Amino acid sequence: MLLTGTTLTTSCSDDDVQAPAPVEKATLRGVVSPAGSVSMVTATAADGAQRTAMPTAGSYSLPNLAPGSYTLTFTPAADYLTPAPVAVTVASADVQAPLVTAALVPSVFAYTLDGVALTPPQGSAMVLSTRTEISFRNGDAQNVTIYLSGPLEVGKRTLTSATYRATFLGADGVTYTSQQGLSPAVTTSGVLEIKDVNLQTRRASGTYSFVAVRIGGLNGPVSRTVSNGSFSGLPF
Image (cartoon, rainbow, N blue to C red; front, side):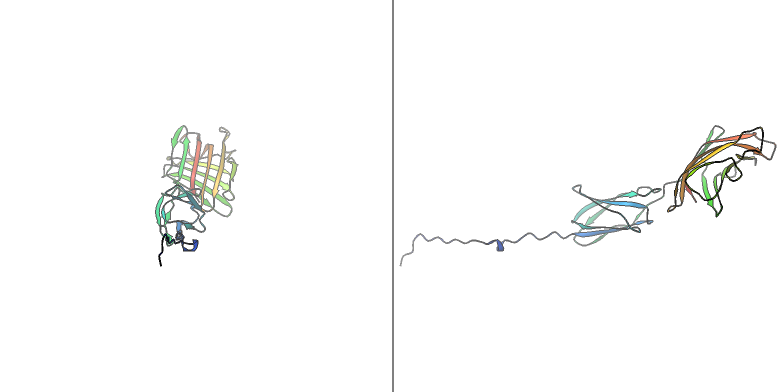
């Protein structure tokens, strides 16, 4: 028997074609300290794609990340500096990012005394149950103290009464006060504006100015003028 012109062909069904293996994804976890210092964490991939997370009690997680290199950047909360970016590599397993610590913005205090600009190195607020004392100290040389009746709260206050007043203590030991009615020769005045009180970081910011009259002592000027007073990051 003779066989001629015979052609053998084979074919593959769709079931025989292997699908590509799925890309395994991972979760990136991390911690920022102190808790509440960072409001958002952003992970940026090499291709520019971004994912964000909001930390809870200092911890954050970014699930379903494809393997690759990422740059973590951090959005600071109020009163904190921006932490440095962190580079991480995500593999097929979950990844723990390095601990990130955010620092507080440095405190800044300033005022002008009779036309001379000063930057006292120390400042604080002592908050008691019925009153608050805000102090700016330049060693033992020049000290400004603002007395408030009540807690430290946002708002504007006039500093000319016994319960709301400002004082200046000079290097000569002479004290001046913005309280009115203590000297007919000088019209005192004063105002304090507290612009922000952060209960989490326990820091406050604001501005102040006052004209104070000498009380006690016979030496020194009859009055002192404190202007352009400002403070940020005032601890309390």
